[in-house]
Amino acid sequence: MADSEDSRNLPSNTRTNRKSSNRRDTDFPSRITRKNLLSATAQVLLSLTYDLEKAPERNVPGPTSTARLWLNWYEAHQRLARITKYQQQIESKVLAMAGAFPVVQMNVSADEPAVTVYSLADIDRLKSRVDATKLAAARSLLRKRRESWNSADRELGYSPALAFEHDLAEQERRLSRVLSLSRPKTTVEIAAKLHCLLSMEDPGNKFTDAPWADLRRILLDLIEVMRSRAL
Image (tube, rainbow, N blue to C red; front, side, top):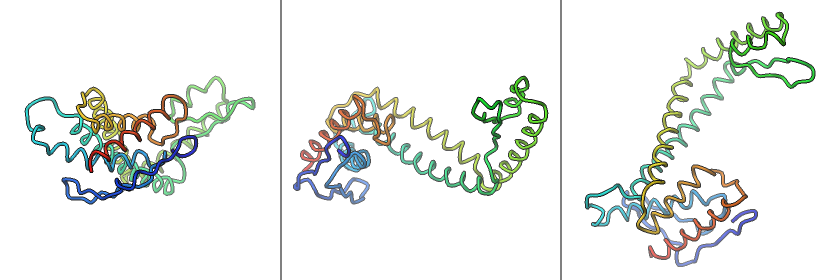
């Protein structure tokens, strides 16, 4: 892969388009690097897990399959990515309207870095270290910033978006935990579990220490095996 890991070109006979059961065309990338590993794997898995779930034997009673659990998790994962992006856009608008975050920087002493306070209680805890005039000024500034922030928040709906993001993040974590405990029966499902693990623990593919680079290589190996068997 990129950087310290080798990137790979997939064999030419696997560079094809497949149509998943939801009738969307899936364009598989011909080159997979560290940067696009997770997104490329998701493209492959979306097609193969849908196909896997259509198999007749999947209709028999029993525990929810790893493939279905991955599909459930990935849907929540994608929803979380969208709401996070939206929440960040709203936060930027609220900040522009309010002029500052509802926090205050306080200089406690010349030998220490400034302290960030988020509440009046935080300010009160500094009574023994900061003179009364500075404390009063900090309280006044914090109240003004809170008022401005809350006003912009109410107008733009930032708090509901943030709460929704937290709910989706908890749902994503819960689904990933259920998926991690599942028992895969196919190579596709093993890759699905590994994809979820890497997406949750190292979404930016930035970890270079063991075992992360090796896990990424294993996932890439699995992609090549899956794609060669699917054609």
